[in-house]
View 1 (cartoon, rainbow, N blue to C red):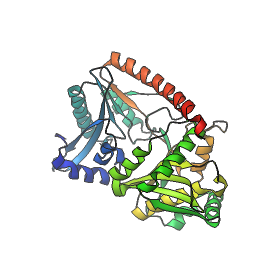
View 2 (cartoon, one colour; view 1 turned 45 degrees about the horizontal axis):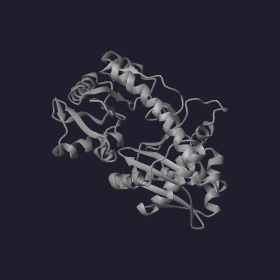
View 3 (cartoon, one colour; view 1 turned 45 degrees about the vertical axis):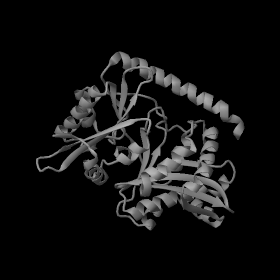
View 4 (cartoon, one colour; view 1 turned 120 degrees about the vertical axis):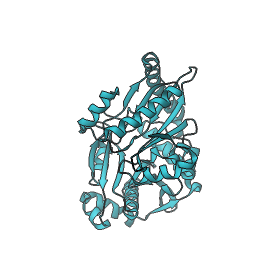
Amino acid sequence: MIERVTPALQAEYEAFVQGHPKGHFAQSFLWAKQKPMWSHEAILCRGDDGAIKGALSVLIRKVPGLPYTLMYACRGPVCDVHDYRTLNELLDGAKALAKERKSYVLKIDPDVVSSDKAFFESMRAYGFEGKEGGKNFEAIQPRYVFRLDVEGKTEEEVLAGFHQKWRYNIRLAQKKGVEVRIEGKEAVPAFADLMLTTGLRDGFVTRQPEYFSDMLDNLGEHARLYMAYHEGTPIAGTLAIGYGDKVWYLYGASSNEHRNLMPNYLLQWNMIQWAIERGARVYDFRGVSGDLSEDNPLYGLYKFKKGFGGDFTEFVGEMDLVLNPVIYFAVEHGTNLLRDVRTKLYLLKNRDKR
C-alpha cells in the first residue's frame, strides 16, 4: 500500500531511510529543506507486517513559462532494488504524483552500480530510458565516484590502505603546522571565498555563501564544515555530510597559495576519521571522471581520490521516465544549452576576482 508521507509520518520515514543500505541524504526531508526553489513529496509502501519496505522522495520544479513540472528523485528509491514488487509500487506511486503535478518526466539516478544488469532491465521494462551522457560531470549527480569501505575498521587499518605517499602528505601537513578545525557558520564566508577561487581555477560555477550556511542549518548534526588553517589563514576547506551508514565529501576548496602544505590530504583524513567515528559503512569521495586517460584534465582528481584506497564505482546513471515527449525534448535540450551559456558567463564575470 502506497502512502504519501505526512508530517505525522516524517519521523518513521526518516528512520527507515537512515537505516536502509540504500539510504541517502538526498532522500531525506532534511535535504528537501535545502532546496526551497523546489516543492517536495515523499511516498512509502509497507509490507504485510505494516513495516515500511520502500520509500521515495521527489523534488518538483515548475518549468518557467509552461504549465509543466520536472520531477526528480535524487539517489532514490530506497528499497531492495531487486524486490520488484516494492520497486514497482513505489514507481506507480511516483507516476501518480507526476500526473497530479503535470510532470513531463520522472528522473532518477539510483544508488545502483552499472554492473547490475537485472535492475537496469527491470527499469527499462517499466518504461525508463537510460541516458548515455559523457564521462565527466554532465549529469545532475556524478556517475563515477570513489567509495572507501570503512565498516568495522580502525583508523590504523584504514590508514594502512592509503598509498604511502598519501600517508606522507598527511604527516607533512601536520608537520608544517596545518590545523584542521570543525567550524560553524562564522567560517562560511572564508569557505565560500575559497570555493570561488577553486571554481575559477577549475572552470565550474560555485554556490553563494548563503547556500552553505543554509546547509549547516538544514542538515544540523549531519553536516560538518572543515577548515584548514596555516598560521591563522584559511587555506582550504571541505563540507561533509554524515547520514545513515555513509559519509559524503560534498564540497572542497583550496587557495592558489599554500598548496605545497598538502591541506587537502589532511582534510580528507579528518573526514574519513569522522566516518570511522560514526561507525559508517562507506566513505564516499563522490565524483571523478569516467575517462581514466592521463591526458584528461580531470585525471589529477581521479589520482588524488584513488590514492586513499577506495573503489572506483560506476552507477547506472540518470534514467528518465518520459511522460510528455514533446515537452521533454524541448526542455532537456534547452536546459543543456542554458547550462553551458551560464557557466561561460559566470567565468567571464568573475575572471578578474582572482
